[in-house]
Image (cartoon, rainbow, N blue to C red; front, side, top):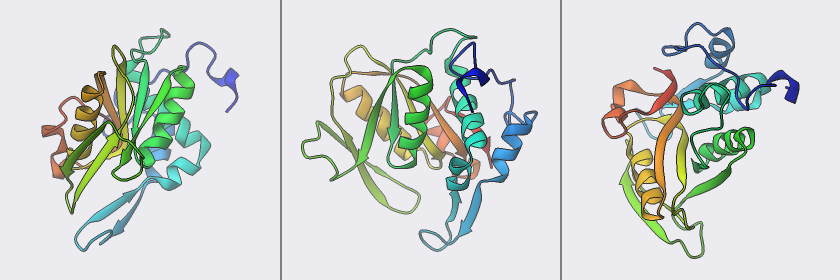
Length: 198
């Protein structure tokens, strides 16, 4: 897409509602169809939802970025955040796109062991393992939007919120491409904005 495709704001306005939340958008319905499912990955019994085909499609990627940002950007006004925090690894892809469109910075929240001197490390449980994430930086006074690809049990986003808070930032919201409702992650991350739910 060219910059003239979105002349008034960094994000295209989206009507309320999609796939389950925004079902009246043809572009988002098309994007939803690009998400694939792989059974028994990474462990038996887990259905892995792969957003990689969606990310590889420029139109679908832009439509999803617009839908993720919409609740956090007032009609044509500046975004309600100063920084987008993306959780490794697919969250980086979403954070970079959102931050570039909004004119903000990006905070990578890394898996443990990827930074030489992390200031904050937070451990948490996944639906199939234990994990830890970490980051560094002075976020004093920064309004931070957390993004990731999938909301499953909510442990990763809740841990990321703790990372941001310990670095001095204020989390203004969280957004994901896909929410897996049966895993009840919303109980740990109430108010998380999901573009699609399954």
